[in-house]
Image 1 (cartoon, rainbow, N blue to C red):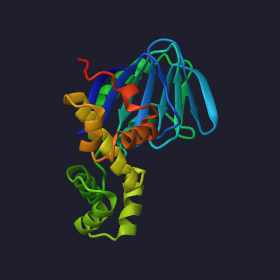
Image 2: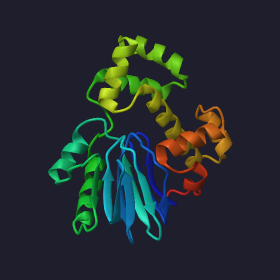
Image 3: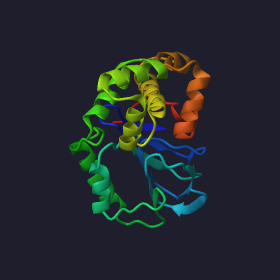
Image 4: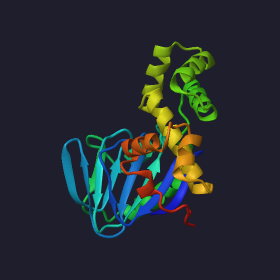
Length: 237
């Protein structure tokens, strides 16, 4: 696997796989899958789309990717406001049950060029509600387990537990508990890519109980094991 970008601050993550075969999973990012050669399959909502050259999977949509003998480039984007969805709509991208798929797509390179420029010039990660902005900042800056995290958050934003939970899911699309796991995974991946640290040390430093706990979370969110995905620490230029 080649890693082209892993920017937690902007919420932009870009990778290339010679082959990619995932388990069923979902994540709080929009995922763009581009076949470099050959075709791949995408399974979601009980339906299998085959012979694909391009697909976009909306955030928090369960799916499975099968790309045997097909190199794919993956772009993941954290989108917590309407900028990305507005851009995709303006380009004629319409999701059906959370996915957009193409077996032929001559315009894909043009779209990807526009998308690359767009993601570099827009803030896609910042929510519109200041209380959710403060909540995310608190989660990212404090290494707390869920129970202590919730009490800290409610005091920070002056909302009840239930109201904060509802508002958070409304803006981010997942529960606070699931976002906490996502945050730990991002931190773990970032540590592994940039520090001379093994997976066991990374899992503990990122707040997981042990490597097995991180591996299970990794599979649930990204569909593959961390040892299979991150067999390279090298960021490609």
